[in-house]
Length: 386
Image (tube, rainbow, N blue to C red; front, top):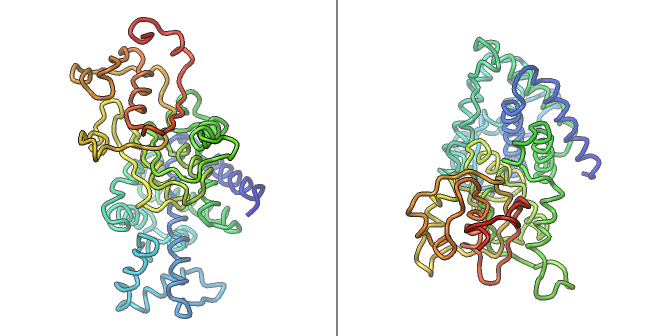
């Protein structure tokens, strides 16, 4: 798919969102829209892999038959499902029951089926608890399909969801749905929703231009800049990762095999879930990244709390766009924390230097950090100036 076609897909989806959300808060509608796009990606990827796995046994349906070919195979081959899903877990690292595939959900929406809402709820729970094992619990925890924002009565909510899903299905039917395309569409939508969110957009999205600069800095071969970028980074960390766009930009610079493992941390539960979806949508396997929901400054992630020098996480690159002049409440014990012990604690009114020291705490000796801070850090007095 060309860059122009990718932009067209993003604009098509944005126009659908703008048309359908009505009086609903943009942030609320964003979460529904992006979750449905994520389900579409998981399903298409699963069906494509299923087609390859089954080969000549993959059903060929008439054009007028709107069922999923894989769903038809599931119906006719119940005794073979366990072995098939074993192979799918090995190859794509997850499974989805046929009734929860996007094509099955879209058909329920097209026919205005009264069971759509309940089926979608069950599908989201299945993906959270069973598709990936226990790695993605709570992935849809902020998606309330029974919210009155969708309608006062169950029937109204079901009808609203049928309309939204039908429009999305129609809008993207003619576009390719590989991971790069849907991943770019996901990023486009995040950017558009961020643009409409004003000042708070920085909580979950780093503008592409800034993201490019930070990514170029950490991937540049500092030993010999004339040779261009490094070939590989073993570990990359973003301790305020938002929707994960900055980490994905670094990965894009180096290619799919250019990063050994991606680490991210995010304190906002909704944004944390967006980041996990974003990774998978861009083809990052669940074994290739680890995103943690928690507070970086408190350092409540056990992975980063490791005190054994031999096991302590050290990364080749840190990228971050933490919240500017963030107010925090450091307790006395943090003054003895390895990150701050030699430098002191940042004031409660502005945690900028605390974020900086946090990043330094996990940087390897030859590592590089690129972080966005407010220009005021250059002119601070008191303990910060030292």
